[in-house]
Length: 83
Image (cartoon, rainbow, N blue to C red; front, side):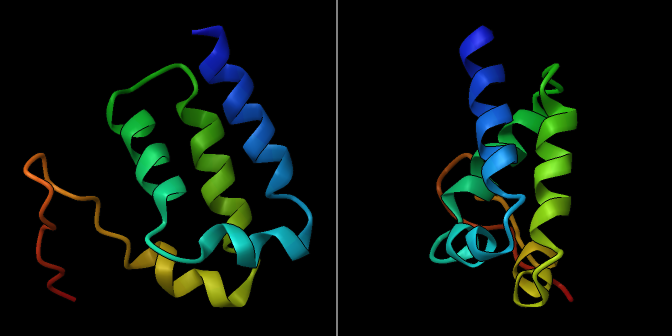
């Protein structure tokens, strides 16, 4: 889908400036949920989702939320984090 590709490119480019990273990682991390959905669906844009997640981890405060992120289950709950 061309729109999904454009959205992935846009948020990927927005994740490059250091000052944007802290804003993107705040809250319930809807961005991470959406990107994980792209990756799990094995969509052609999966590589951009991986690059975006990698870009976020250049902010030290984002490493822990990204590493410990657990996507919600299909019923809206969360799989328990065993770490």
